[in-house]
Length: 111
Image: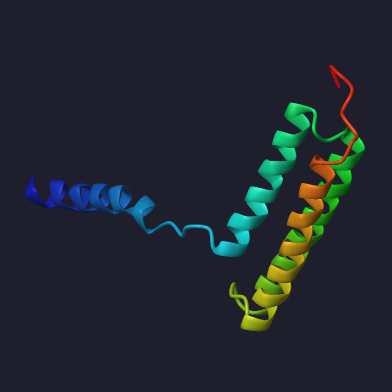
């Protein structure tokens, strides 16, 4: 009986401990997520039109594609140069989202 419970107990511990080792998003991933959330909030509040949101989302998607390619090229890690390049692109996108949200255009109600 003890032999039977022991592997089950070990399996239970392994499953319980599994999520604690999940990798948290890095700073680049967090910034991409934050920018997408800012765009979504802008659409929800009417500060962004559909066209503005689509344009800003396209830039975020381009940055995600660059990030994914860089990660694939280097075994799941970004080099310092890649991180700096993405950081500069994300800074530019952040300013673009801000400017778009604060221009005079307002989304039509109900759209």
